[in-house]
Image (tube, rainbow, N blue to C red):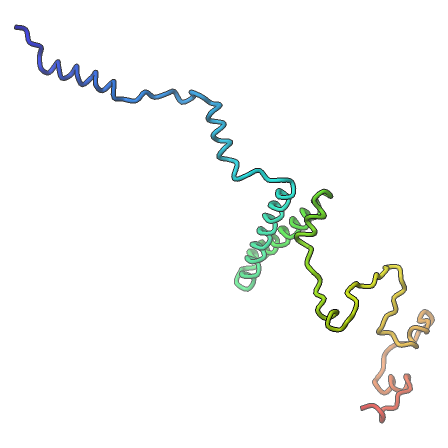
Length: 186
């Protein structure tokens, strides 16, 4: 009557049952290609962007940076110490320069659409429409001789190269020189 020892039987059952219930672990480098694929899918946020949408997103990023720098600079202008204020001012001007540089670097294929979207404000023609004036602005050439409206006719006709007179004196001297009668002026 050889009965197996009860403790041996339970130990055998435990050891065999514990091996079956444990899940099998795979080695860490089982499939590196799958791991890379998962990393790539996590990196892409949203749908693919077209060319102009990329330009627009980059512009909006630069614009947000600049607006944030401007906000910080002007909010802390009177409260910041001089060194901090200098740092904020540099950041404000730097972001503005970056924004302008990016606008200048936009390719010609997207330039027209960009200008239309961001700089294409409708003209305010309320005054012209109320007064029946033409809406189109007259073309002004930079080469035209434009008269200065602040010059008197005597100043326009006069040649000042030979003028050696000092312009020092009182109001009475000026009135006498111009031939103005002080009694008629009020």
